[in-house]
Image (cartoon, rainbow, N blue to C red):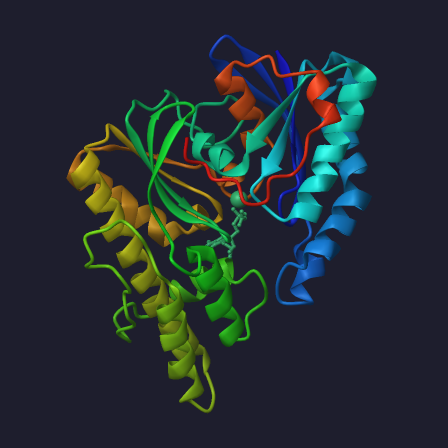
Length: 345
Ligand code: KG4
Ligand code: ZN
């Protein structure tokens, strides 16, 4: 089965092709065009601007993915496309592209939940560096950390997801981005904070860890961001060493909260495996902390491969592959974006 994945939920225009043979998956092409340069000027993603960029880029991206795969559209068995959640005008571009090619070539469409894509990105796929060798055992607890989401999800099997906890305000990635803006770092700030933190002292400042000691599995990051804001406002200038210490102390606070809540989830649900996925899963310090914690709790940890941490279309195609669905040809007539779609099933 040859599956073409399309992802346009936020600020990445991505098209991938994967091949599935029974339960085995192989990456054939993986193309991602990031709009970061455009959005950096505004300090965040503007939905209409994102949609316009997707509209310009989607066909060249699709063309490039097919060329790299040495395939033509008529050889595609399924089109997997992100239906939500995400920015409605951005999602529409990917969905409309899928609809047009589905109608013309009579290719079935599989609508995919973006967060399910992140969660299934840790399944084994050949041709993606750092991908697991064996499929995770269930039940699995997944820590999903991205620019728009912070979730702890219990995966009982593929397609069966229970949200155990989520953020009450900002997502973890959003907190990274907002603190980076306070420190006048470029957008998106996560990778820049992470880089500075490597040379900083993680114990320099004691920033708050909101909700960390509450028994529930929910998160809150807005108070932490505000604490950093007050701290920065109270200083006239931020020299390099101070910036590194703020970044390190902030990263420590975020990691403490994420790891503590994940450990609580492990304690309550005794999963056989644990995963870390989403844009913030690229954070090397968080990866290290969770590795330590998984070892201690004797649970098998699956980290998203670096290429699949950020938004991409391979994970979207993988969802269709792992569900072993044939999709639907007629769905193109009525497929609409679902900007606020819950992953809970
Ligand atoms: O999953 P993603 O690509 O897009 C969404 O679906 O939101 O996640 C993007 C988020 C941004 O907030 C970005 O700052 C964050 O992931 N991020 C990081 C790192 N790399 C990306 N945050 C912390 N450390 C990183 N190394
Ligand atoms: Zn994402």
